[in-house]
Length: 105
Image (cartoon, rainbow, N blue to C red):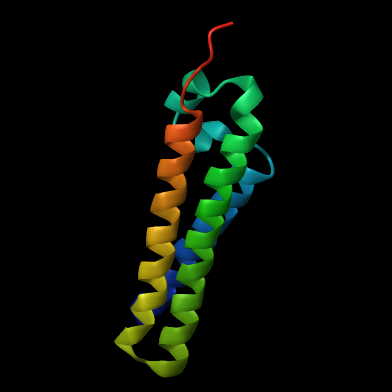
């Protein structure tokens, strides 16, 4: 169980930092180089915001899952992870569909 806690906490911190870099610092290439060509400069800030928030939510729920596992030692703690995973996937899909279209100039 301790290995799961450590892994969830470490990966959660990683995704939270990654989300911060995408959201606040607008490091769009950290997601995928494809987005550099497909997201227009006009939409870059909005795309980074939506994708970054999704990554921060995912990372935060992983850290919360690690804490819940440490405190309760219950496998039900993984429900928090599942909710964060679904939220992150939905946000990334919405961001991709909405902003991965380079407008003709």
